[in-house]
Image (cartoon, rainbow, N blue to C red; front, top):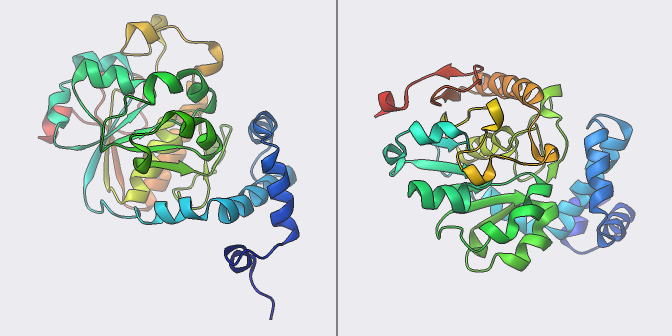
Length: 290
């Protein structure tokens, strides 16, 4: 009887796909992988081949990461959470209401938002690989103790060099780069593979929240606008390179896909942002939730 590949991998037995993926990944072709993922649809021949290679690599080299993620599945079942964007509306939002709530923070909220608003998030997500390269030195040593972090697997080597004191709270996700969620590719199976969609909120925060078992998800500070250059709550972060700016038209399509997925699973996502342009989800005033 032929032993399944995943069993062979766990027992350390060689397979041609496994050895081939090992050779490719040892070469660390990050730029090539980024380019291919952004250009090739996940259901194309090239896309499927890359996903297969990444899956073999995930099970072979990083099976421990998958096991660690599975230990978190549905751990917060029945609870609600608040996902904080980085929009300027945070300045007119009473974040003190969230001190005893489960909260997600993204990008430069650590360290800027932590110090400005005095709120240490329960979870911290960064999905953009280029942004990690630009900002890893500014946030890596200032992640609050107890905050669980979720980053791209492809950046594990880079992040491991900088993150030390909170390393046990860091989880790495096998993702497929490029804005593909708007085309209908959406997954919340963190221990397998997820797709990106042009905004860390849909890339990581919502999939992570669903995987962890949260059934009520509220968006705060998700302004989704570059009105007069004002996109971030921190003045020093107002101007960013065009390469790092979200394509909101595509991101809105991704939000639509996420909403349909959530509705089908009975997960309620509501928008508690003050103002902004995100109208995909039902609006609610944050104060009304307390």
